[in-house]
Every structure is written in C-alpha cells, then in structure tokens.
Image (cartoon, rainbow, N blue to C red; front, side):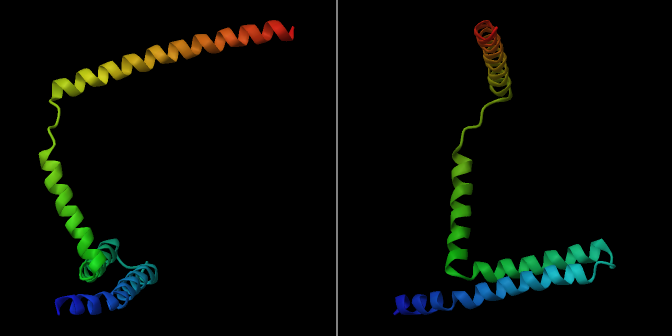
Length: 122
C-alpha cells in the first residue's frame, strides 16, 4: 500500500515543481519591479523566496534524492585523509618545477622548429 501512496505522490511532484518555478519567476520579477527599494530588503526577500522554493522542492522525490546524495557526500568527505600543509607545499613546488621544465622544453622545440622551417623557406 505504501508503494501506491509513493506513486501517487510522485505523480503530483510536477505541481510542486511548478510552484517552485512560479516562486522563482515571481521573485525575479519582484526584484526587478522593486529596484528602487533598498538592496538589503530585496536580498532578504529573495533569500526568503529561495528558502520557500527550496523547501517545496525538497518535498518531491527528486528533491529527497538530492538531499540524500548531499548527506552521503558529506559522510564520504569525512572519510578523506587530507594532506598536511607540508605535503601540500611540497607537491605544489614539484608541480611548479615540472611546469617550468615543460615550458622550457616547449620553448626550445618551438625555436628549433621555427629555425628549421625558416631554413626551408629562405
């Protein structure tokens, strides 16, 4: 029976997404219409409208899936072993050295090819 209720809820998700789109459209229009008002008040209004639209969007199946994805990603980020400051600095220095070496090689190769082509042309 719960599958039937979930299926009916999924069928009504388009109504919720329409409401979200309408709230966003009205917010954009209102921000433009009240352009003479204080930026602070318009920003607060946009944030409130975005919060309401976000809350409605989370009530849909896709919205719940997105929230679940974000929560799982947060859990995975906590499992990451981040490098220390010393490791980061050393890796950055190695990358910069390699970039300089490759730039010198490409500069020399470009000069060599330019010299060879110039020899054929003249």
